[in-house]
Image 1 (cartoon, rainbow, N blue to C red):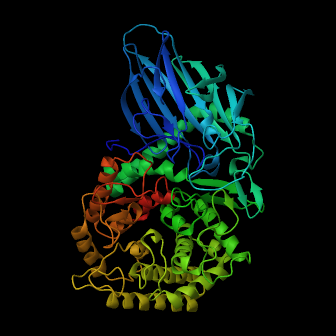
Image 2 (cartoon, rainbow, N blue to C red):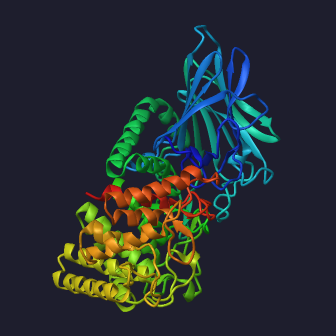
Length: 619
């Protein structure tokens, strides 16, 4: 990868089991995506001389000479006088396989080649600190014990006080459940103290390689409308020790599968948008997967719950699922349906009394009801969330060639479509997904969202054979789109941020579904006029979201890129790539940043980076 990555994924499983390096991995502490230390130290010994290859300790570091990344593996190469050491960190979170998308086991394979032509005694030790099982060191005490496994040696560590699912929040880490550090075959394991932290370790000889595994059993992963749920990977009775033994035994075959998956993503992304686009998707993939948790509810339904990372910690947020959706539409629509099921269940429960879609269903990992402004009607996003839900269900139907999922929820879709008919032509003073920019009346982009929602509902009804009703919603969508073109036009051929703000501009990302579905609601001069304005407004690292501020959103930049010609898409890709390449902010990919300074605006590690995959859905 040619990009200077803003952050390097090492262990990426779910919102809690997450370890990153924010720069050179043998020079800095490993961190949780929040920036809290999640210290892991890796050491290699060559003929008794110990050097550090991971994390920070008092040992001298072995020289890091290269770092490469694909969708599922981070590969680091080191050298000393005697050997070249290769470390491969693989989190096999395969979106096209529900079991692997859930199983909480991440690999580190170490191997070496001799440089000086002599035989050497080479071993490695990994030490994982109590910070992986506590919110922060000092908040409780950890303990450990050795665990017997088939084909592996392991040590287990957890907090002494197991208060499962006892709290929720954004900048918090897990302090229940157990971390497992395992090594394939026979190894030496135990506990130690480094840098004042209780830790567990595993040590093994490289002959000429060895395999380590990190695993985490969170016991119960979500509270879902009052019920504690286990993760999907447990649904057939597997235990964590079963999963670790299985993972060790199948490493070679699974790693080959991961390599094929990553190579296919690189190939198709390069073909659709160039090498820089492929790098963006490869860096984003594990972040998107690790922002979710896959579970099975008490009725046997799959649910896939996102955490709204560093924006408020909400769970199953609709306007986070909306931009995340393209990656799942491309790889596995079942995971997207599993994201929407909590919203449908809550809206049907009787606890949600409004004629529009909810914003969220809790604060992760407690999924019990809306957490965002629940008692404040002015803080809701009615047009936004109704449009999001209908568009996403329509997109699922299109992708699957079936409207079965829509039919299961048609009563709510009908109610929400009626809301768009009533309020979508010229939205009131409402919030939209870009709520950080505040309320805005007569929001043109929100009007486009409603138009595409009506169009999407028409397509659903048509697929269900309700032709007359489908035609009515299709006519409304076209009528509203014509009204938009007339009332939102600027003299320069672009279109406004708000109907009453002549000369203003904004990224019209919601219109991308018109292009994808080839519905031709908006004339070609709309798209051309917009891109002339985007190029005019562009700053060194992107195009601002609108003319109120110089910040932008990465997902929306590539969505509008998909609405243009090949050179337009590549233009947006190049700006976004430049931001990630030069930003001084060493955090997992941020989707909200300043286009003039390349500084991120708080958001990080959000699943909305799945929106970057939208171009893959185009012919």
